[in-house]
Image (cartoon, helix red, strand yellow):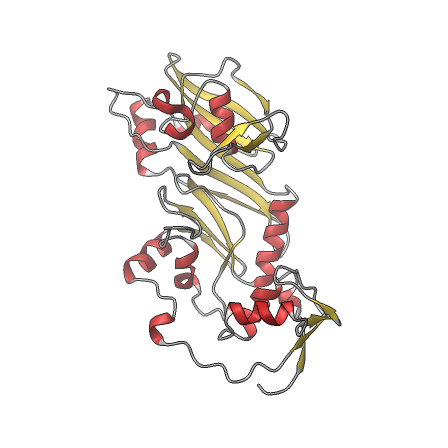
Length: 325
């Protein structure tokens, strides 16, 4: 492309970030060059300078400067998903329609990449493209060691609507956790602001009444075992990092296997119970991009299913997670 061109943002690109819009239209344009074009004002939206994280609106005009010849990516640089990972991620699908894919994420697998993390859900989504022009998009996250419901948008428009539902709290998320000990109150609401703990020993959050951001969780005890362990149903009303783990530990009942927040007390030695984190995104209800509500449930991962069997927890006892507001 040798001259300036102006392209209109389509309906299905509404709320798409500028950098992702360019990735869609000009996949060979390097990120560094895109940032330089943005910094120098050569890329404009409706005549105004644009930023890479700016959200576009349907009908807006994007000025695209001359980009020159963009060489094709070498085959070795193209993202690839191994056959094993493709089969694994497809086996995780628990719901799929024209707009939405819902996964039951296994524990121990990161949602997105980061320092030292090369294997993650986001890197496997190409295997769920099927006959769509673009790969699906994540609209929220789960911690690496948390399992359960993870939602993906199949188009830019669907992903935008789904992400908005999470930001507006129109989505209801219900988690199951096994904790060490039992809460003093069988059910209640935890309101304890959370902030990132100082230091460089990895990402760790803590309750901070002075500087923390508001964090609210409602919970109820479904079953307990002689005060040694309890099965909790937890619903976060805010979306802070590690919120449920911090709040459970704040009650004096750390989530089983959560050594990060519970230390040695988060494990049940000598009981033959897994030392993995026992936190599972069990159910989700949210507005569907085409209208109505989507409700999904995810089966327990193997280690939690074994723990439930060990303590004789009856899944039927939980009832309908959305039966009461």
